[in-house]
Length: 415
Figure 1 (cartoon, rainbow, N blue to C red):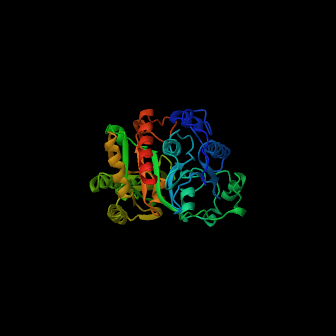
Figure 2 (figure 1 turned 90 degrees about the vertical axis):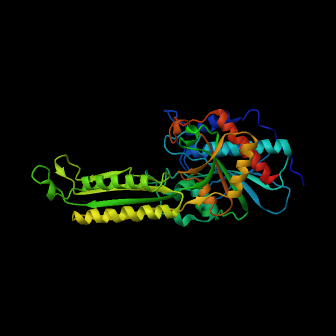
């Protein structure tokens, strides 16, 4: 039985208008957006988006954790779904485009397809994933990892935010009662497509309109603790010191140089440093620093970690100091589907878009879906490479090019 079409919102809901509209939910005084998982701003945004979808050809529903879906039924009865979208949550004082653009792009692409060609052969669903950033609770990818089955309520039952509100309490307050939870695992997703701002400067620097992501980097994160000896800054000779700060500086300089030496695409970041006792006239006895390492090949990550940690141990042993290395994140690199990459290249060439292959140095929901089904991730440029900031910006021309490319990819896959 044919499902009647609803009214066409294409004229009034073009890209910039809809992005500004979604940015109003959680808008800050500084012009940014703060829309944390299950917060009032998050609830308002998801409900408003559901209402917007309800006014179109899409049929909407939430799963039990708050992922929102807008479904365009296919005419073939094989039960498979092409899923496209991104995440609705933001970091604190984030930008208008991160996550949101992927939802808007998917929504408009599907509307354009429906009003041009009618119902597809394969079902398409636009998804507004409930969480990706990890900005409120100490976990990331709650939306996509719930769909994949990697996360259940067991994973979050002890989690709390900075205000002491438990994950399950926040979930209940947002209208997703844990008592009625059912695992939202999807086994019908045939392919996943996501389009996202780059959050970097490569595309803009190379004067490209579109990036076709071939891999999403693996991420390893560590806490490094150095234990030396606190002592008097004036009476302790330099050769007799067990100075944790100078040793940390030596190790950080070494890992930075080693990263540049091993591979141009390898990045290593020390972003957090704690010093004890942190007094100006006392030699530091302890230093703790963070280490974030990213690359798209597991072998390169292995080599880098092996070489720097061997050096760490050798240096501290020679100084009669102690080093403790604790790993707290190990996300594997994920390749995107090569067939879908080639399809995007073919379309970009046919439409004369300036494009390039690119490796994503940031994590995205596509890395979760990439482990469960063929997945494609597309980028559009970020002005000056700025993201997670009220200054985040992508030109309307580039936003539209991304939607045009996504629309054609969806057409090839679903129609």
